[in-house]
Length: 219
Image (cartoon, rainbow, N blue to C red; front, side, top):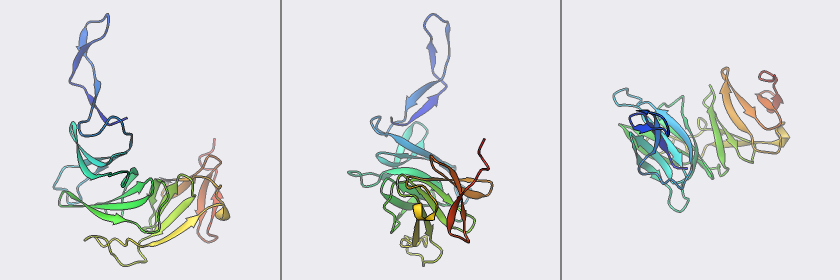
């Protein structure tokens, strides 16, 4: 629990052995050791003028890791914002989608500072994986509700200063579309999204609007 960094500068002695330099894990200040950290994401500055930022999704909210301390970006108050997964947009490199335990949100990086764009309407599931495809559609893997497809391009922008539609078209895919009636995750490989369950690996057939088993990665 908590977030730790590898401190390679400490010098310790192992029992029965001479003193030598060894690496050790040290807690990052500012994040409670009683909460879990679910995801890390390194984000480059879109302008290239500022250093990259390391983000951490924790039970206490979203933080930026600055060396040995954590700087709050958006803290969770009474469970109000609990991120599970982070994903940087391909179409808008300064935007990070945040999969929450109860929905989806978005933040944008503007002049080195993070701007909360808001929660995305129509998504209340536990989002555990995110992929943006080549058409700009966002695929969400959920813990128990199959797959969601979010289309931001069909709606006018309403987000804070970054033209993000917060009420996009959201489609849900489940057992009626060829998926098992369980949680399904999504991952990017070979230039396309793959959908994974405990039963099989699937691809999406757009013409039939169905998921079909795929044997590419089977051994």
